[in-house]
Each structure stands twice: as structure tokens, then as C-alpha cells.
Image 1 (cartoon, helix red, strand yellow):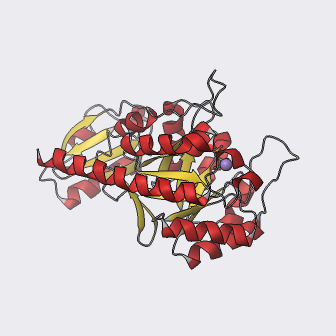
Image 2 (cartoon, helix red, strand yellow; image 1 turned 120 degrees about the vertical axis):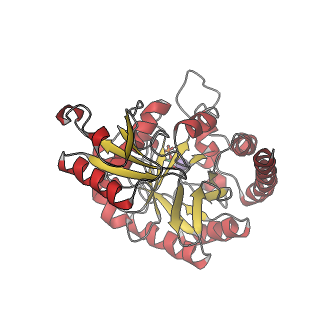
Length: 345
Ligand code: PEP
Ligand code: MN
């Protein structure tokens, strides 16, 4: 439920309401609006005497939270969340468009340093790269593990970039923690609820991908696991879903961007590389992602896609990436202009 405080409610009254709710076993989340304070209370409502909370000093009314994604939804948390990735690198709210790019897998020092250089040169802020890879075949390249993480951290630091890398299981959290700024939870693990809970306690930003056959609501509920453990630094990622279509690797669901934005205060990014799976179509989808209102994007690039150890067919080479980043900047400037004009109108 949401406890709506009166606009003149004092600090003391707010504290008292929180103390009462906690005493009754509720988890509380305070949301400071421009007009008034909202206190989200999550717990067993049957312990409440009817009218008890309403009778406390400073309380205006008590409302139910209708959506099942109580912390992720906009009922309690009305303004957009700004996720802090690392000093000076943020996403969401009114931070500009954020580009993340890098290889599917970290392969060699030379490869990851070359990627970091081109990402920074083109205005990207986050270097992606997998060191623990979820592969369909156990015989495919599984990633370099900690050695790959070290290389990626060094490459990112050399160019002032943040790092995003995938965590596949709970045991990897401590190994990855010192090297990354964002834990990526991949499409195959979106509903690994034990992993979500543990990553929710790891006090780092999280990039949560939509499940391979996951609905938007399931994605929001997975994010709810992270927030319920106290981590609100969560970025949602549309990466395409499995449909009956066979001409593309996945069906990139562009509609998820505006629809999720309406449902949640968390930032949304698109991953057109996995979304379509073919590099020749990635630029068109990338521009559509910006135009659909995403807060950012994650792209796969490789110095030589034909030789990539994973996801080569969907990786852009550096000249394709440079050309695309130029266009992304132009479309995102245009989107910014539209926003400013709408705000002035
Ligand atoms: C990846 O980012 O390389 C990856 C494996 O992504 P997804 O979980 O979306 O398939
Ligand atoms: Mn990949």
C-alpha cells in the first residue's frame, strides 16, 4: 500500500509512520514527491486494524498498490530513476543517451583494448564484454573467466569507460565484483530468482535483460526481485524475444521501449545486436531504438567480426560502428529537441 502524507507533514510525523509500519513487519520505501511524501509499505495487510494508519498524525490517505511490481512501477515512485554507474557516468531521467559497446566475448588483450579505444572515441561510455559466456553448446568458447575480466577492466580504465559484464551464477558474483561497474543478467537467467536476489544485494548497477520468451511483466517482476533486496540501480534491456519468425535470430520488440517506460521509473536500453542477430540490420534497429525513446543502447562490435569467437554475425566492425554512432548522436539530439519543445509547449 501507499501511505500518502499531508503536504505539510513534519519529518517527525513521517518518521513515526515509518516506525509504526516497521513495527508491524512492513518493509518501507520513502518516495519524496514535489508536493508530498509517499511511504510505500510492503507486507501483510491483514495485521492492520482498519483505519489505524489513516489515524496517525500527518497521514492523508492510504491507497493500494495495484501493480504486482510494487517497487519497479510508477505508482509509488513517480519520477524517473537516475542510475549511477560510476563517477560521471549515469543513465535514465534526464541524463543524455548512453551508448555501451564492445565484443560479445573478451578474447585477447589486443581485441578488448582496440574495442575500448573505438568506443571511447565515438562517445560511448561503457565497455561491454563477456568473460563468462552462456553458450548453447558446451563445446563452444565459454569465455576467458577472470583473465578476461582483468583485461577488460584495464582496457576500460585506459579510456575512462565503465564495464558491463555478465554474471551467470551466484558463485561468480564475488569474482566479477572488483572488475565491473554493472552486473549483466542475461536472457537465460532473467528468471533465476536466486541469482537475482544475490545480485540485488551486491550494491552495483545491474543490466537486466528480457527473457528469451519473457513477457514485459515477467521482466518487471524480475527487476522487482533486485529492488526488493535494496538495489534500485537497475537498467532494463529489450534484447529480442523468441517468436515463430525464422529470418532473424530473435524478434526485436521495439514496442517494449515505450510500453516499459510507461510502467516503470527505471531506465530502458535496447540491444539491437541480439535483437536481430544480423549485423547488416543492426544500424536500422539501433536508430529506431533511439527514436522509440530508449535511455541507451548496448551494441556488439569486433575488430574482425568474421573471426569472432562468439556472435560474429551480429557484430559491427569498427567502420560500421563509427558510422552508426554518428547517426545515433544526430537522432538523439533530435529526440532531445522534441523533448525540450514539448516541455515548453
Ligand atoms: C550477451 O550479451 O552476449 C548475451 C549472451 O546476451 P543475451 O543474454 O541477451 O542473449
Ligand atoms: Mn553476444
